[in-house]
Structures are given as C-alpha cells and as structure tokens.
Length: 165
Image (tube, rainbow, N blue to C red; front, side, top):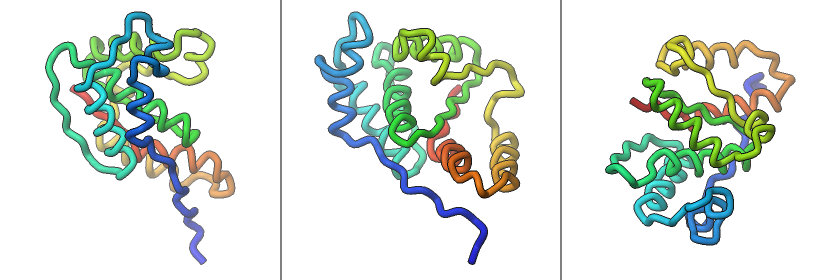
C-alpha cells in the first residue's frame, strides 16, 4: 500500500454557476456597485473555470474594458470556496498586484472577511516561478501525511495557478 495520499475529488465551477455569478442579478451585481454583465467577461470566466477543472493551461487575451481581472478572480474564488482550497495568483508587476487587490476589495467588501480569505504577498521572493513552485511541491511531499486536510487544501494550489505579466 502506498503512503501517498489519494488526490481528493475536487468540485469544478460549472458554466451555469459562472453565468449566474456574472448575471445582472448575480452575486457580483449584488456585491459590486455599478456592475454590469459583459458577455466577453462571462465567456472568459467560463474558460477559466474550465481550465481550473480540467486542469489545463489557458492563454486568454482580451482588450481594455473586458474585465479580465474579475474574469479570472471570480471563478477562481468560487472554486476555492467550493473546495476549501487555495488559489495563488502570481504577478510580475506591482501595478497588477494593486489592481488584483482592488478587485479583491470588491469581491470581499468586508475587511474582516477579506483578511480571512485573501493574502497579498509582494516582492520578488513571493513571485511564483518554476523553482519556487517545485520547492513548494517538494515541501508538501515531506509534510506529515496524517494531516490530510492540510494536504488537500495545498493540493488545490497546483490546480489553479495563474502567472501573469
């Protein structure tokens, strides 16, 4: 019998959930003053949700005003909530870090709730590159395997990692 824990079955975010999230009467409209549905944003969010569920790589390009940041953060946040896991969003620039932080303010307007759910790490040492990712995975392999809850939540990280420039 292998001492490697089984990979937990993870719940995906379905198209209907994305559509409801981005609808005029959805959670985003309730939480974000002035939110208006944009089909291109919903389409991107669906693609992100599919890439997270598969897992697979998604390269998405969209013009100004599409709502790219919310288009990937919202389905990633729903995925993390459903799976009690974590999503790492790694950026190359501080400007994009600040933009993501502002979007998280909109997703979690209550500062206490945001503090429980969002961690912002700045600086080159926190940028997720291949070396840092390999080190993190290696650290997981050496942890106490009796703590399946810890392993399960950290396994989620490998399913949804965004590296943005």
